[in-house]
Image (cartoon, rainbow, N blue to C red; front, side, top):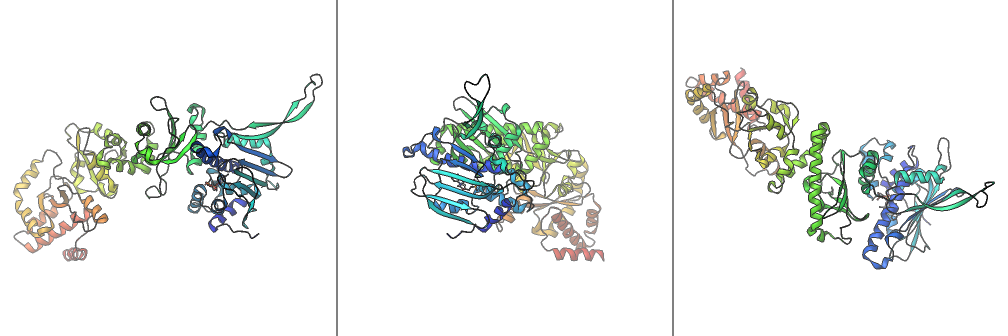
Length: 627
Ligand code: ADP
């Protein structure tokens, strides 16, 4: 029979497995058992709603047989099984979630770094680390034909029809011969297998059984003990899912391993949230916040949601409705005996119990985050770096419905503290006479640090929150107020500060300068005023009305031609030598004064990060003045 070739993408992973020098080869058993358990999940779920399956929960099991003579290790399940297409698609190619992700990560990371193998599910192929031949006998539920898939590695695989009575799958591994420094025979040892199952697969919720040989004293040999070998069928796992266990009984390492395997992550989670609720609705949940943002988080490929279980049986792999959008980064499972087994997406939308659970989980996540913020600040900042943007989106979305819930999870960089601060911390520090919460927008901390508009506030020692992400300003608009204090942009012409008498004077004395500059610039600006906020800089632009410069820039990117423009107000520092030089030329050399006006306006544009209307004209202007 002609051998079929593995799909090329699978081949690399396969090669890696066959030639693996990885020391934790033992994880192959976890992978094969996990596949068996998933296959049983599928049939078990069917059996709940379809009498034709003719099986009940207690009938499902995974059986292990090890035979040292033939060097075979057999893992058998009575799950859903596979037909020819499934075999082609699932074992001939890496289409499956775990392996696919693994390959992607492999490509991103050090290509030959096999150390990452053990860190999470790499699936079926990992068996080639210990086996030189793999045979899969399988019959799918509902099908008539059984199949035999066989492969001894890189040269491909064969599939043929065979006889098999019962539905399910048998994976037969021919364990490699021992080699120098490599002991493969250990995987045929019953105690080693027992240990591995305890270590990796204890929570699998179907019995994993194996016939084990033990020495027993023969009856009637009390005087002169004689022993015989007896075979006992033992269940090797405790079958309690990790989320059903009391959190005190579970180590952090166990939670981390569970998370990495179940949710295909290299990194341990940032935090684990085990929850147990008894009351109107009774459920257990085990939630995780990843430590790194998934690479596809902001794409449509990313699926938010939690896994739903009903008394240990998986009923939905990804229930979106149970997680609010703003916490879509949370992973985990919820298990409730109250979930109906034949739950469908349509039913879910109106399911009252589900809504109640969703509400309490939302609160739980929020409280957990608040507590990390309080007690483990560095860790929280790490979280915020990864997912802060999502929290901000949460505030802006749905007309601000969630702002009360989310506002205390925000962090902004502070001008005075030189680090990230929360709104509460800002308000607690506000000066007695301070009316507003000040914020400034810009591309980076350095740009904002040098904003002329912020000078006065800075010189008076007021704290300013820095908005460096495009969503920041929308977030602040969405919040409107915090703790009864309004937000105010440093570019706003009214900063709520007692005016300097000096600038009042200047205002009156110099109206001639202001009018001149306005006339010189025409429609380019809406207004020219004497600045109350500039200290050492000669000019700045401020935006009047509802649209800020940051918004103007944002809309120019996402909706070019929308005509969203901020109203430009040019502020002049009448005490600055450059502005004085301009003033002196008025009446004497109006042409020059006009050039100075344009130059100052262009500089104000540059500082505001706005494009110059005519950069080469600006360059000529500067050169002319240098002559
Ligand atoms: P993953 O488990 O991450 O999806 P695997 O490479 O381990 O990747 O398995 C590939 C696919 O093969 C599984 O998703 C499943 O569809 C199928 N499969 C593997 N083992 C079994 C089994 N014992 N019974 C039924 N299907 C199986």
